[in-house]
Amino acid sequence: MANYLNWLYGLNGLIVFGAILGRYFLVAGGAYWLCYNRLNSVLATRRLRLKPPSGRSMRGDIQLATVSALIFAVSAMVVIVSYDRGLTKLYGDFGTYGFWYLGVSYLAVLLLQDTYFYFLHRLLHRPELFRWMHLGHHRSGDPTPWTSFAFDPAEAVLQTLFLLGVIFVLPLHFATLVAVLVTMTVWTVLNHLGFELFPQSFPHHWLGKWLIGPTHHALHHRKYRVHYGLYFTFWDRLLGTHDPIYEAEFDASLRPASELATVQPVPRKDRRACWLNPSTSRVSTKNMPSDSSTPR
Image 1 (cartoon, rainbow, N blue to C red):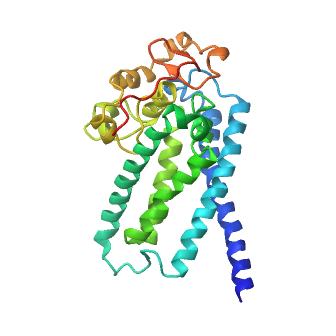
Image 2 (cartoon, rainbow, N blue to C red):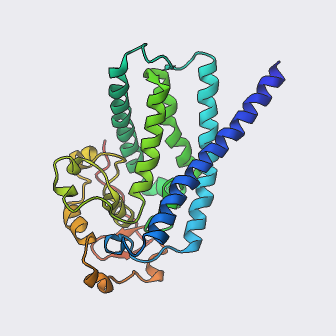
């Protein structure tokens, strides 16, 4: 019986790994095909990248994302086994807490996840951790949808800990958990898209001021010291890591077609490193400054 259960869990693990990897190729690959091929000319005036993505960098992202998918699959199997043993707070009956709780718990998880992500993300940008836990995600420079789930193995493990922990302390309906996973996937790909899809009024609207978008994350991949949030700008604004020129950068990203020729790519020799000095717009691997404003 034990051997049968082990075989069954192993088979389920392979199925889960395939589903997670398939989700990545479907959403990230679909977004890349749509924005960089099908609609590339239509979105030209909304492009955030400084130069076209290279095949080498995208292959590197896909390799890291495949390893991350394996780690996420192991995490998912821990959830499945724990649920089978009655150890989690997951439930399937809508009447257990009522329909109102679905929305409340969904928003609560997004807020908690955003908080966890902000402080973890900021911690990983410490020079002593960055090179072996987060460099892989930034290696391609300006992101593409393929970058969305390209994590170094250590970071992938840390990323899984939030949902692993929350299901043991917060009652969640399976539908809520799925909604959170879908939101995370879509929002992460959107932030790494390399194109600004939100309307020009977005950063000036009261709601837009509190949401992370593609321009936010494009600036993060260039400057490294700003915009650590996942969904919301709350922690960035509170702790001084919101880029004060974000709105100007957003407006500049929606440039008219007549100005496209003025955008100059950064030379290849200046894109190979992992730290962008925002005052010079040149990359340097030497004397990487520490984040002196890291929360205490």
